[in-house]
Amino acid sequence: MTSYAAYGTNLDPARMGERCPHSPLQTTGWLTGWRLTFGGEEHGWDGSLATIVQDPLEQVFVAVYDVSPLDEPNLDRWESADSGLYRRTKVRIATMGGEVVAWTYVLDAYEGGLPSASYLGVLSNAAEAADAPADYVNALRRRACRSTGL
Image (cartoon, rainbow, N blue to C red; front, side, top):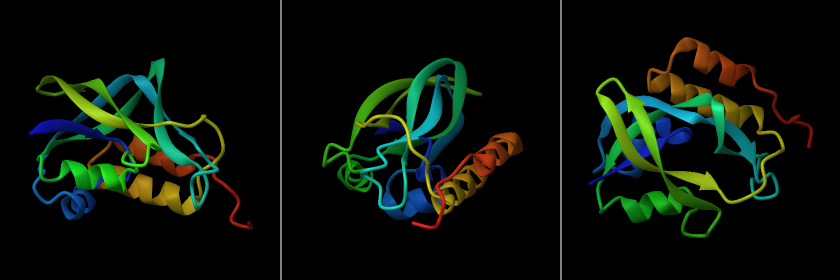
């Protein structure tokens, strides 16, 4: 098993359980020195896509899963890593039990653009399901989003 840090829709343990049934939630924590942002608007069907970028003053709430080798290919498909849209990178997660080295996905596109309101809703609900602090969830819900009149 390898550790995977989810910061997007996979924060939700129920969603992750459907996508990767052999990969249990290990813990939650913070990816320090990174910030959640959006990019690749031309690749998303409904606005920009979630990603993370290095930023020494920020942190991102994550859920850390023990990913089974059986589930890794499926997760790569879900996250479009098999198409090259996202790439894997190793990061260090600060948890209550200490530091964990995990891999996560980073969008291979330029930062910029706005996510849709529905996508932000899914992200904030996933963070809430993972027991992210209320201020983190509320900040997600207050983020600027793409107009629905496309």
